[in-house]
Length: 321
Ligand SMILES: [Zn+2]
Ligand SMILES: [Zn+2]
Image (cartoon, rainbow, N blue to C red; front, side, top):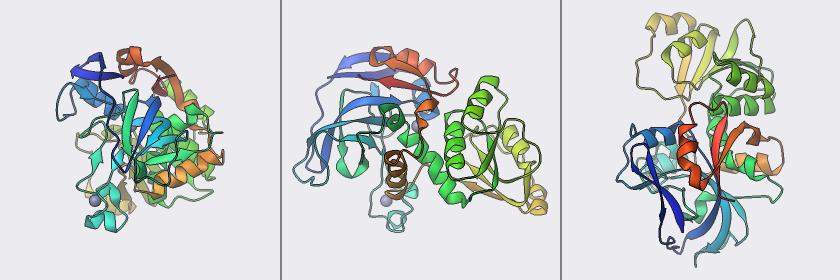
């Protein structure tokens, strides 16, 4: 089967690999689409360490089940599925409490476990999510990124009618706008890039809103952008941090105490609740995240796809069809 591997930083190679073996609790997925995000770019550029090279990248994958393992009873050949690319152990204290994003033995597809940029992948059945046939491939490709956005929303307790500021309108910011609008919040974005701001506007976000906000969702990872966002958060308000960056934040305890702000980090999603509810939304046609996809590439042009991640407003993706 064809696959694309990272030979060294920023060097991809189209190779032939043997088809993966399907364990008794796995399904074999014929890949159809793969979304790219900043984490993939980190691996591509060599900023994020991987166990070995050549390395199979990619984690936002969807496709069709073409075989099921002997012990799999609740998945069937022909189903289209989104892959949940974080396999929690299910046994540690974090997993037992439902806080699986904090699992210390988490298998992270494309990061500490081989990725999905191949024609066929074997995935534990429990981490594949069947979607209705009516769900368009483009919408399904956004499942994982939308789930990241929706779990931040779940952890924030935001409700209908609240005023929310989304900082940064990259693909995560856009999906947050979409999901927040879907639950009835009023959404504004803080985004200096005109093309991204325009795209956010088309997702239902105000681009020139004034006044204070009940909540802030930070997606850019830029310390100054968070600071500017916090300046618009009302007293007693909460900021959810989704963007990741290693620079120190420009904050004092006086900033936090006087404004009684709560800062909360939100990492990926918890199994199974967040994927379950996101796929449910897609099945009911309540959200159409596919419009965040703004650049499509065939597998053979994976290098161009990765190179485009920062420059494209919206999301780049690879189509296997
Ligand atoms: Zn991602
Ligand atoms: Zn665990």
